[in-house]
Length: 375
Image (cartoon, rainbow, N blue to C red; front, side, top):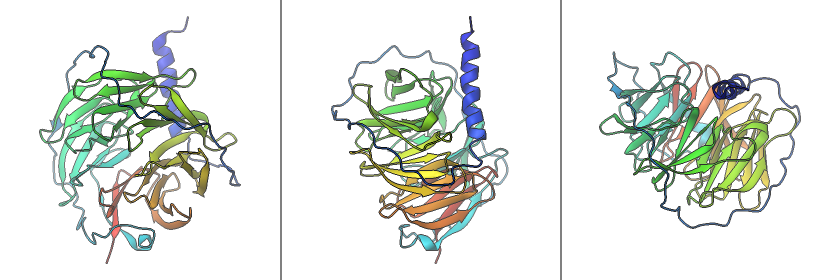
């Protein structure tokens, strides 16, 4: 009989190998993505019932920064919304350094005060106004997704929730083998995903209120809430994108990204109005979907596999992060590429500031790049 721990290691190894080999030769010709099934209809709030709270364990605390980190000069330079028309003028304002390993994720706080970024074993939080490191958090390995709560008071990985003001961990989640985190739009729920079925936590009670379990593949590379909080999307192996009904915990729709053998989808994001979904695959494509119909509207191409993707706050731009060492900016309406931003190594993640004036991107060269409109 195969030991459960051995099976879990096999699943984790599969995820790591998939991420490591995502860069490489891909399909030579674009291919249209197929349509999907009927849309979700539920809009009711989540039930208040919850399962038993997980056992509280010791939690890591903030680690005081050492030395003087590099300063990103004039992060607020320009202060103009990055739009398709202005994207040609987007320039690098500076880089944030101080990492020993690859930067795996970046996230802005909802109030625009902080940029959080992570490598394999720590999270650094940077003050946007000064460009200085505010604090460092000790964390578990393999942090591939960070999330601030909508009110910017909390910062979460898939294993830990921190209070931003006190810089203390307030809860360690019972979430082994989980790597990604996403807050619901109202901040009441935290979803975590990875090599196990998606868990939905009540942030206030710190209890699991729902588990999203599929019959076959429960591995998720990315998760995202719809802006109205009624849907939770996840992506994974074989080009699979699932749209879950948050109320029922059932799959309401399945989309398929890519064709051939390169199908894994590393990241997804909803547009600010919830009408569109964007996906980033190792097949070198960014695909834009109409959520209501399940139809693929545009397919946009990099020269290598993709790690990250996001919408601008006004919903008019998509930014994509690729193994080809670039971030590309795309016009949502036309699917046209409007800007390519070069990096020193593979780019893992990308995030817009809440006001849309800055763009942050993390890369394998241990740097966070900060971009804005230079004047």
